[in-house]
Length: 368
Image 1: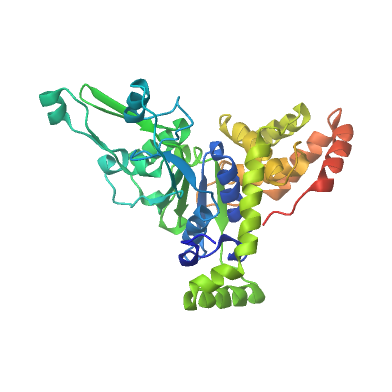
Image 2: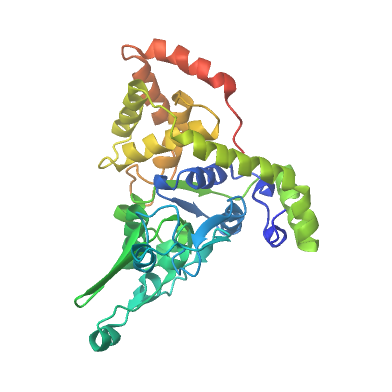
């Protein structure tokens, strides 16, 4: 068992919230999906799930003493310091570290987030000096922004740009500096406290809506589990270690399998049909659904995307992208999804592919 696991509530022990857990797991398998926005009322395990996710991820190899935790195996994606060391013919010393979870406070300044360049020192010495910010600390980890809807819009833009590019670029006066900034971006928000602008919502890969559980048995289980954890975190973690290990193995196997997964032209037709029928703006939704469907198939141990994978991708990728009327609740339209799928089935070639999809379902694993 991981030494720190006892202090963090186990991911596997979280009751319900199936879509939230799936969205987080899919981003862990494939960070290129683009992060996840978790919308919901307080007390629905949003922050617990984010911190628990990190415990499922394996330790990473980093360049020792590098403030950006550069990957020593990726020589094409190094910070200036590590690149200079390689250019001088010196090897990068390797260390092993846990995947970090970095909290970004609502009151953070831009310099605190992106880092600062010492202009005065550069003028006097001619050398760049960069003080790393939160984006540097989050590289190859998880950047968690609670109450992201209360964050300044400009800072949200900066975060989303870095998450999309995998690089943080800082420029002050005539000096510029860049470093790797690859992270899983997780934003949480309570819609009662205000919404994000549609332009910013669209740039989160996935979004889920979480609510308090109304089933009495489930609520009883939540209370008992939480009290047992608070009484003895280490013992509680041991009880769930087998389930945790299964999830860790599933994530690692999915990462390896992802590059082998295929998405047919028929499945791409279904993706684009759904996006058209949901009247989403632009093409980001189609691309995110494509990536998500591939990742769902890999997570379930398959190398071919089927109709159910696309349906699952639609529920996660379109919740925050469909057009809504003022004051209308964020809710996924299952009826519209069903109409889109039926329309797709009426197209030539759908019947043959449906038979292939049903065959692919034979080895489907149940998501958590």
